[in-house]
Amino acid sequence: MTVAYIGLGSNLGRPRQQISAALDALAQLPDTRLDRYSDFYRSAAIGPTGQPDYLNAVARLHTALEPAQLLARLHSIENAQGRERSVRWGPRTLDLDILLYGELILDSADLQIPHPRLAERNFVLYPLYDISPGLRLPNGTPLGALLASIDGAGLARLEPTHDDTSDRAQREAEATR
Image 1 (tube, rainbow, N blue to C red):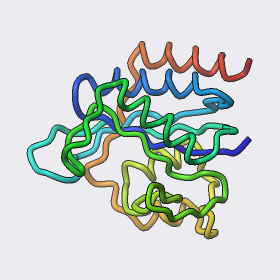
Image 2: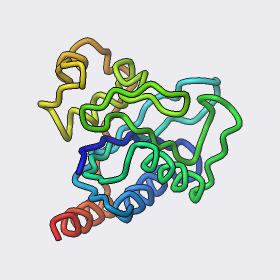
Image 3: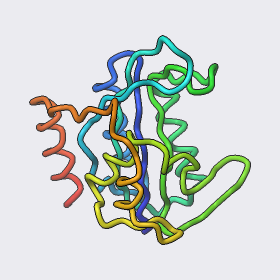
Image 4: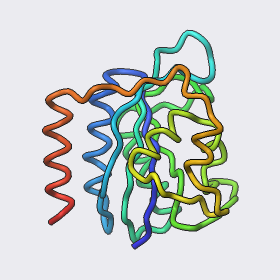
C-alpha cells in the first residue's frame, strides 16, 4: 500500500457537504483506506474574480491503486458530485487532486506528482501539515520548511460542526476495522 495525499476543494453548492461526501467516497475506494483528514479551511478563490471562497481539506489514503487508477477514481467522484470542467480555476462543486503519492515523482501529460503548485498553496500546505507535520516531499524538502516560507493570509481554519465531529468519529472507526 502506498500513502497518497489528496487535496479537496469546493466553492459551489454546499461546500461543507461536498467535502464530507467526497471523504465518504474516498473511504469507499477499492483497495484503499482513508487514514486521516485535516480540518476544513476557508480560502479566497484563485482564478477568475467574483467566485465564492473555497472550502479546502487534505486526506491521507493508503492505497494499492496505481496513480492513473486513483486519478480516474477521483474524477469519477468529482463527476458524481456535479463537477464541470469549463473554466480553468473556475468555481466548482468539487476538486480532488493527488498531491503526493509515496515517493513518486511523475511528470506526464495527464498527471504531475507531486502536484505542481503544492508549494505555492497555503490552502494545501496548512491542512497537509495538520495531518503529517513530519512529512518530507520526494525531493527531501521538509513540509515544515515549505510552510515557513508561505503566507497564511486569507486562510481560516473552520471550527468543526457537530456533524463534522460525528462524521470524523465514524470514518476513524471504519478506518481501524
